[in-house]
Length: 486
Image (tube, rainbow, N blue to C red; front, side, top):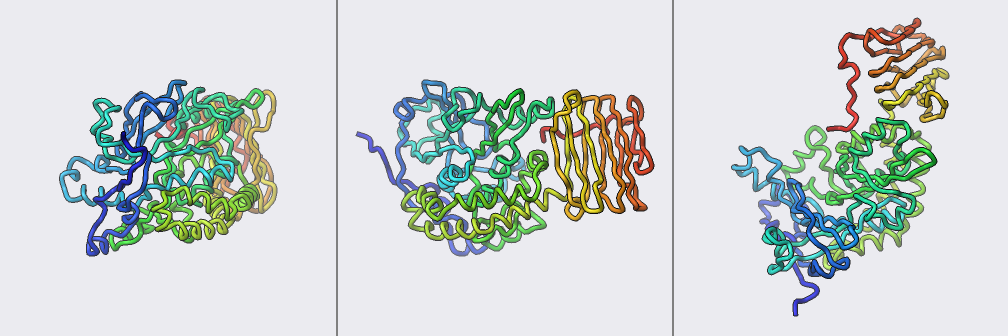
């Protein structure tokens, strides 16, 4: 009878000499080469029986999509990765292949197991990864069996259809990926993202050092709200948490602020917020533009309150026992230290995002109203034309924000700028492809014009007043706006 569990090593090939480690780093090699106890994968027994649906298309990870008898989907992804395919054909034939392959040792092979307890405590949606070993004689993957045999994998839920709904999504009607959700958001002002929930999820990213949060790393729960629809974030693919890469002579140089800054080691402090934001800057700019400093601080303090010592300890205890013995106490202390720094990290994230803010409309008709309130503040509102429903409202501080960019898209939009001040923020107005009405009734006592109007020369009604600079053109490319980050 086959055993239910076995002892297995995730990456014996990461065991290197002291000389090699001096140049290329210790990283998490000890974790990769330590035997851990893992359950043996059984396709017929797990989740009432699974079957192979399709093979994944990732460049680095061996992955599969599995489905149970109810239609619920699961992702089955290898612990070890081979990033060689991200290199060009030329470099794949050189020593660079081996070096790039070796640097996978910087990632934490079991870090994703820690995340669910933390996420649950602070109210962030999450998957529930489970560790499995595929035996060397397992043939349940058919022609792909040789890709999985003798290897460690993580099995976790996918959120794609109504079959994947759980009690955690009691108000949701389904799920979308980022591309689908963004298309709807920019097509109609009946759709919006839950920005406070996204900020909470992003602060959790900072806590666990997850630098790889590009738009492909998110799914979205679709939640009806009266006649509108709200998208709530579901972070996934937590394979870059708790990385250790800035040890070793060459990685330390390569991950400096002037090179691959985003590859930033997890440690005692959240000491480079910008590094942890680089891969997510597309989404951050679009989905965090409503929040003021007080919102960030309220979320950070609430997370601190909920991340008790017991929560942190229970989260780290989800690591395999052998791994916990090596680093459990240290990781708990690191998380406690980082928890204490959440308000400061939130303030820094806000500071970075507040410097230049873009406020896009949709393909529907909207009114953008800018009020230069005084020498310290400027208010921006966006309303739905027809019902006058408030869609956006934020007051910007001049000592935080240098530029505001308002973008109408395909609708017939209206823009009004008003208020007389001695100082002001530069406001850029992009009318978009519809027939727009733009009026500037503001005045700033400055030798520079602080309102710039961008649109096509024909088909719009524009009153430049005395403050606005005419930046209209015959070139329709003035309407271009990257809505999906492709």
